Image 1 (cartoon, rainbow, N blue to C red):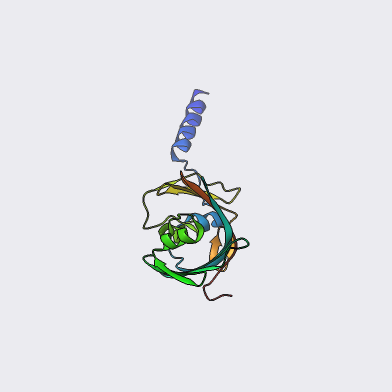
Image 2 (cartoon, rainbow, N blue to C red; image 1 turned 90 degrees about the vertical axis):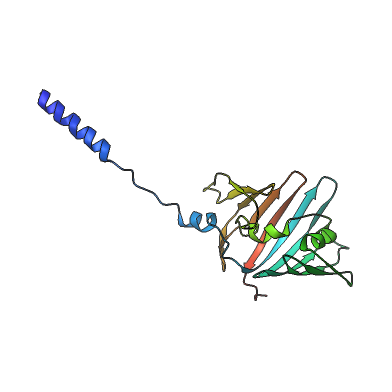
Length: 198
């Protein structure tokens, strides 16, 4: 009896020592949207944009075309807001508004058009759910698989991305929310496409 007990304990201890739990890979959909999208350099999207600050706000539509480092942004707002066109790169841009042309940095021109200061350098990366490679340190939050959402903080902004879906450019978010100590924005994307699409 004692010999059987010793044999049983030996087998049990040996089995526990050599057991390795099976590694379970993350779902393919999670891998698609949780990985960095710094490879996404050419794209176009259309979205509803709303921005809220302490004493002002803006709501309108945004049509953004990005080709490598160059971009074209069309902004249309509520009744009485004439359509604005901004073209350029991360360093300088020009804006057509009310039959006048203005030149400056992308941030300055967006602020002039909407009254809101938004970090354009980071935005082109954040829109696809990826941290900006030219921004500061990144702090990730837990990903919620059931809601297909993810979030992180960078350069004083807390970003969350949800409602991911398959697009011609890959698995990308439809809802993007950003917030810092002064303002917040929300984008509801209606279309992701290639820059050449209509």
